[in-house]
Image 1 (cartoon, one colour):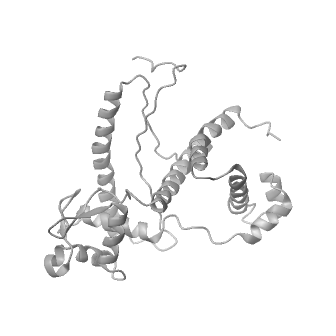
Image 2 (tube, one colour):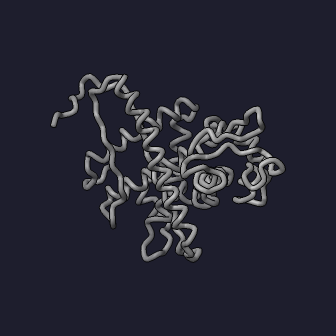
Image 3 (cartoon, one colour):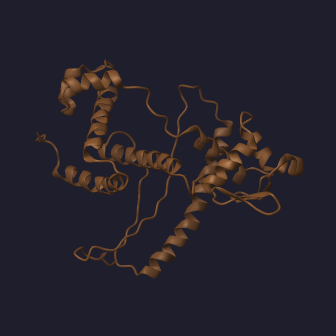
Length: 281
């Protein structure tokens, strides 16, 4: 039953947000029944953790009332609930740290954002080698293990002189669906959290802005795509360097630590012929 206080625009917005997600699910064989079961678990989990009264966990009946999920299903889902999945797998967080050091810290870069090709072995490159880069971030894993995985993902390439070249200025796997899916979940989750927070009008809003035009030629779109890729990457790298500098001197307790996500995206598609053009100045 629809709440009398539910704005009609809310359901319209949710319907639009879900369309690309449903497109992905259909392409990957996720049926409505499978997704409905998954969504039922999410409804119960969010109600359990985020809709408490006086910090008291809600009863099965209250969760059923809030979510519309049958009380027997609520009881089953709460008993089956395990540990929440980590935001990003360990191999991806390690990869992001390595790329950050490679692009911001001498002797691994010639300038901020300019990663140098690194000799693969420490016996050849010494402190300016791929082995040394990995050792600087983690002593628990060998450089060869990281290199093999990064070659598989298309993050780096190995030249004829046995030097390792970074293929991207951030850890974004070019291959490997599981790794891409991890970033998909992380980035879309945090963007949605910022948007939901702003729509809820609770506390200081998060920065969330975009520009959009609907009467551009294909050539203009490609020009914008190239500019956004180049300038946008430099902007993100500047934010990354600043965050790394601040983190290197911050000393928060375990309870006071906070994480951030700063993102930038570009999207284009054919304009709906029934929609109006971008108003002029």
